[in-house]
Length: 210
Image 1: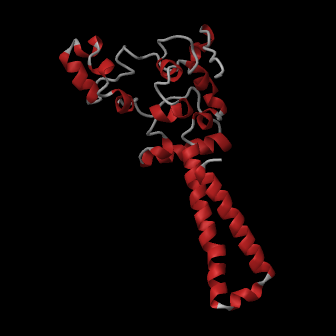
Image 2 (image 1 turned 180 degrees about the vertical axis):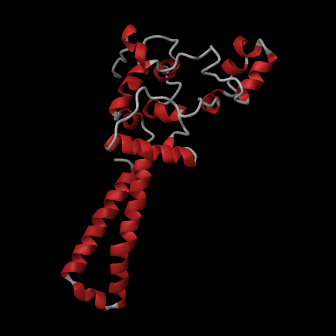
Image 3 (image 1 turned 45 degrees about the vertical axis):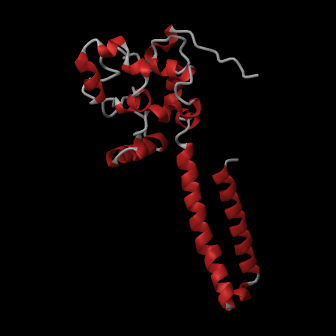
């Protein structure tokens, strides 16, 4: 278990023990110390446990496993293993250019609860569609992909700054940095997940680590 999870379990167990003791020995609350103990057991510890639980789940929601646990995202997970270098997410995932355990969040840092107010509202819409309604197909981004998601890794990298495709026209580099020319829509890196074409490609099979 992770550090937060361990602390959370300890807080919950300790809280349960204290509450059980107070139920069995209600006379304890007659004293000032007993009242403080009851306040801690019935209010402070539950609030602390709730906060730790929320923090743990927020961290978990950044993981690739969490994103791909939704049925409609399965093909997007498969696209990470397409054995074709033209697929942008696949080449990043397979070559550890993004951390595999957080691959989705690394390239979609503004998604739902991690974005602005409107993104959070759309996140609530996703929860409704997943548990009550029906997810829309095909899945589309609400807004054009922002170059910021590419630049927070590539900006300053020699392979990016000195690439002939980026420097041949002096204006292209500045336009990309200002998000005026989209990295994924300019014709250079426009093969993204393309889930509708996955059957046409073979898949990369990762060799088990020794």
